[in-house]
Length: 197
Image (cartoon, rainbow, N blue to C red; front, top):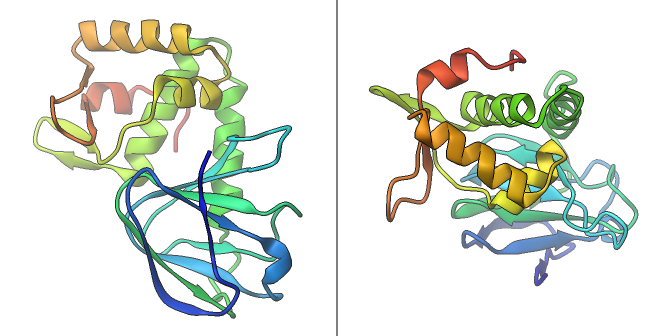
């Protein structure tokens, strides 16, 4: 897994192409420092050997990641869409809201649903509700996750994930437009999710 390092000093804007990651070394950042997403969607994950690749959160425009409250080995930020963020020394007061904690809680709730199908259903609805938008007869998600990554998020194998997604596609609840970067989900799938976002 390749990644770039984020510089210690405050940076006005860091641009990361979709599919690339930036390692944020917490030992190099001061108390109260944060990164703020200016454009795009990112996945935050753990680079630790034991949990390598474990998704902690997703971030979108306006979300902040406090860099002094992370694992001692740092954290990686992967651009799911072309990403732009800034590194600054003082996180703004968001009245107690922490995007990373909120995502971690929601992902944990999903992992505790009874079946893999329920977990996939809840994950897709959460992603669309938080990071997607309604476009006519469909809800668009501006990026795709690999079946392996979805399996990690819902606690199942890639094979099971592929089977479940195929079932949703056959029921015309998901479309994967050829050549497009994202997914389309039927509003009925989003509205009937097992957990409210």
